[in-house]
Image (tube, rainbow, N blue to C red; front, side):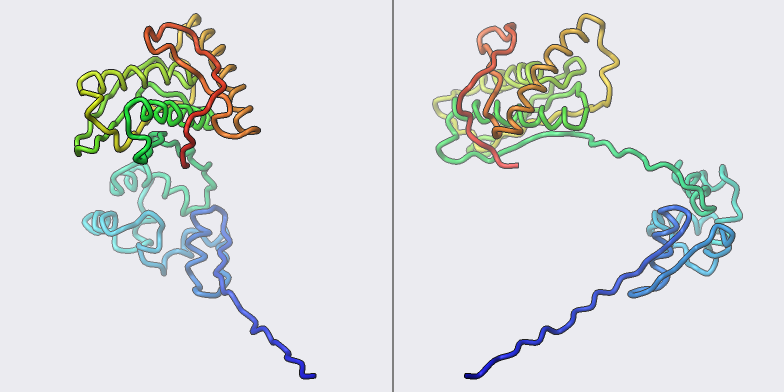
Length: 281
């Protein structure tokens, strides 16, 4: 009986490591010895350790920034380091220049919190979903998912954008403003108002909806613009929305949804247990 022995060929992965007083300098250090090396920048070596490098070695220095620096007679990192904070900010063209002044000297500035400018959901509808009443159910599902994402990020919105595209190739946009909010009931009522405004100008018997997109913009991290009465009402709506979010996370998306009185838009939310077509992420 013969026996076959298999030998695995070792695989080696190279990496470059940079160690420095802050992330900015660590990134620069990691590029000093590529593709396989370790570079260390000590605080006592700054900023002179950077002098041999070219301007493009600095993160944030692209072609346009380099051209701006060159126009101001700055062709090396050494010349850049000799500038004071205000001058570097002016030459750079924005506040990032002042931050670079601190970073190249080893200051560990706090990371800036990046906030999304919009949160939304969209879907291209299948043939069986393109009738207006089916498309409206899809819209409700999209809105509820987008609202849940808004709350996950602890954000509020004052802007709602609905875009409805038809098979004819025509697309209609409806922008609207609301009081600062992130609860599903408020957002869904506004979205459906926009839907009725768009569909009210077309013959729903003769149209097919090809795509729906709903977006929330003008995002803010706090609801500090609300009056006391509105704040109390929103807190109530947020608690309801939060409970629905937690149930859907445990049991599955759209297990519980909010129904809307389509005739008046003045009723409170109704928790509806029913099927709404699933949507992709």
